[in-house]
Image (cartoon, rainbow, N blue to C red; front, side, top):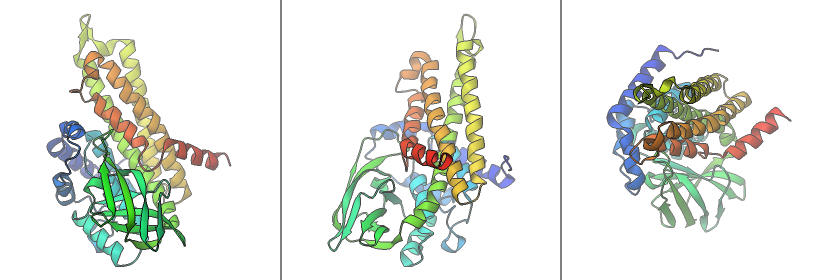
Length: 353
């Protein structure tokens, strides 16, 4: 297994990190917590056009790059490190992973639009089918749909007479109500989506698509968590070198340097797990590897973010400091496209049949 990034991936890493620092500073994440009703899509347009990464997982015939999940992991790590806002996870990762399983004009139109940066897609009901289809259309409610307020299209898991299918819904259609919620993290804004007899197009059965997509979704989220954890370490290590007490840097004290060392060990393991998951190939092994990576980073990232607040002392508890942004991000990632409890149950059943 190769644990080292390729030259192309290092270039992608540098480009994404430079973009995040110049065009998506962390201050934007703080502003978005209070101005969360602003649905400006300019940043996403720049990400799609200037970086060209909206179509990483989309085939070249639809305007994408035909890249791998390893390449996506590089991008998600840098976006997690920089707390970049924008619908990369829902539109650039989850939607293409699902849509690639469905032939036809609808999937072609959506994939082409995503790759060009013209279409934003939100995905609802993947954790559980909260929507039902009948002769009157699709109805139901999902209380936590990521990036729904900026979406042009909704992809929804729906129970119907054939079982469970993936449906496309126009986000502006009659009967669609999208109510934005105050976000836990600006990187993961959610909304309540309610459908009341809405016309929708069935793309096909969702089970095969979701079974193959979920492992790569887990890897992408784990990579985002790994980036946030790395940024936490950079933040607190820099402070420990600069903050003096009793005439010496506080990083020389055991109560400070030992927690930072533990955080670093967790980060190294998290990076290794993500890298391992990207190289297992599609199938059950990737599914297990992705869940293991997320399970480790669910706890280690949240723990590190809490420690960053504490190790900064009084200033770490202020609104103006970045520490709380990472803690919010850590908690939001834990609940993105599947809960920790669901992953624990599935992982236990796989490892202890």
